[in-house]
Image (cartoon, rainbow, N blue to C red; front, side, top):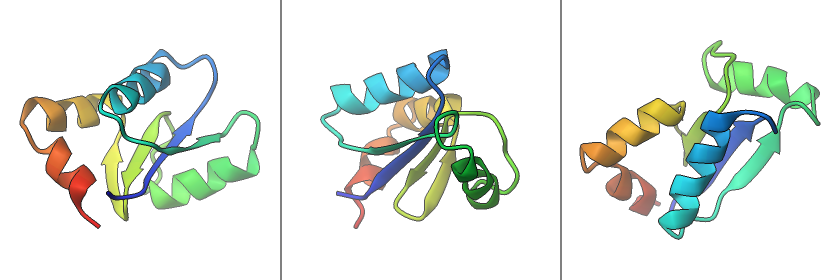
Amino acid sequence: MANVTLYTSPLCGFCHAAKRMLTDKGVSYAEIDVAAEPAKRQEMLSRANGRHTVPQIFIGDTHVGGYDDMATLERNGKLDALLAAD
């Protein structure tokens, strides 16, 4: 199973939805709260090619994007294959 990283903030509804989707799929993830760790926001901006909204989701080295992007992968049947990659 690929490593999953989410950059989030506490009051973000899309962040909660992304975490819920992954939890429902039985996928563990590392969460980086950019509100609690402001220095990590710059890391997120760099990894996400300047995207500044949360969540920013990474599966392995692949930048998925935000919750809507991950939900689209799920609807198209592509999320499980990405999660299963090493």
